Length: 279
Image (tube, rainbow, N blue to C red; front, side):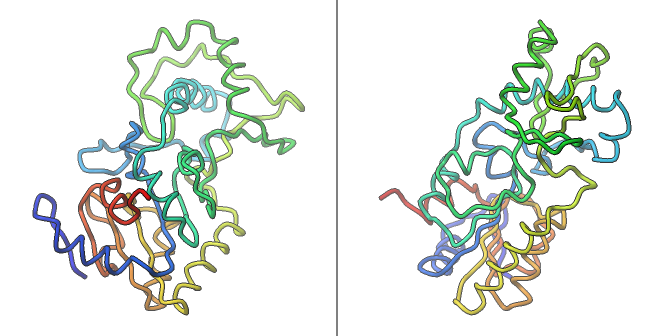
């Protein structure tokens, strides 16, 4: 593996990685580090505080946990929905890889125009009922929550934003959480919580795309992911096992570093802009 240390000249290593990636089939895996330039914080980037997101088991444990989740998420969504795709998202849309796999739930790849896309962990812009399984719009729920909790957002404007569309907040005891409009069941963001499994069809589509790279002389590019969770790391391991080159662009160490042909500690947006310059 060739590693580019943070703060050192990037030109030689970056040029070599770009040369490896250009003009060959690509699968791209993105993580939270790609969206930081859009103002969405990163769980595990350099300097990020330790965070403990709510697990699925906690979410379904009772109404108090769901009240705490939805109060924080209501404020966070009000901010996240205003985020716009950055240069990295737009560069990937221009690049149009064989498959774009994202661990992000913010929907910015879709808004940037990416086509062949698997949102591995779902989309925060959708809500699912755990009873009847109806899927509805987060915008609609946000409007309901705003009506049921007048003044709540104004009282907590100073709450610090966190990744995955929530905020730092303890004062949630008076927050009103509605049920499903169809069956009054429990509403949950249509995303994969910690403690849940990614739906198998999504995983199989990603595996198939990664496996196809081996016969097509392709490469796997990881942008902005620490690969801390297995949902993303497994594709890096699969590619390396197949003999497919792997390039990782991420500020900070990742669990896949030893498998990478190149590990670059440079900004995702800047690197991707070089890989897919404007027409």
